[in-house]
Image (tube, rainbow, N blue to C red; front, side, top):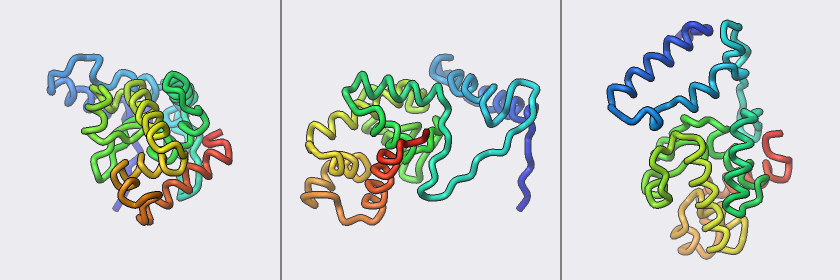
Length: 195
């Protein structure tokens, strides 16, 4: 298998192709990806317009990537609005998506804070790939879980496995994925997240 590097012009062409596909869906313009386009152009991935590609950071388990400062600031604002510790929410977003606004899990979770479709609808998140909507929804959901369980570990477990799984287990469910997730978020939180 070979990997072709697109370069700045290739990235712009690919983004135009993706935008054309989204336009064919007849979504209102604000429901597409202008915020993502703004984040990508001039980001460390593409460099300034006309510039060369910087190496894309590769991270394994337990490694925090440097998040886009604009996204981190938006996450902080969303957390403060929801009454959640911004450092905890920063760690959650890092663990959920690595601050990738277009992240999608095999289970169907979407965006920065990896909202499931039903949860996104319940929280009023119309476009889970809109970074601001997603972060506000994720922070609101975490605040709700913190109030419900009164314990950070249980709220994080509920964020990952669902509140019913935590209630059935009477604590952090015995799922290896959920247990690793809780430890990862708390580890990032204690280490200062993605700074």
